[in-house]
Length: 156
Image (cartoon, rainbow, N blue to C red; front, top):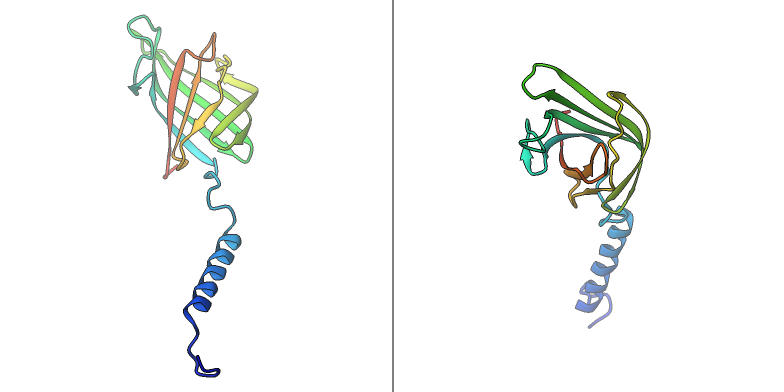
């Protein structure tokens, strides 16, 4: 190849493309990092049943009407609303505290509650790879009574 012809050998062009691609990946950061766990996630099912539902039919005392998980910074708020079976009496339970996310696992530290203020006894939660779903088990006596699935709310 003549010097000054303006034509570069193919291997030089490939090398330039590889360096540019590598630089782009470095400037974008870790492209495999998990989605941020921020915002509101609505309770969509308990123990495989869509809401409203009794997670323990036919012996359960109450029907779960709704609920949500809100994540802000390193803080969480979990709130659920129930209705007593055979009655119009409705009540809520709430809990707040801090959370730590490691990859797709979230662990919780309770700071307090509201409503009934019964601790949820949260097990570590699992976040879907795309960050749209949080699944956690909890219960009023042990941490494995209810398996709850929360879906990210885009309009909340």
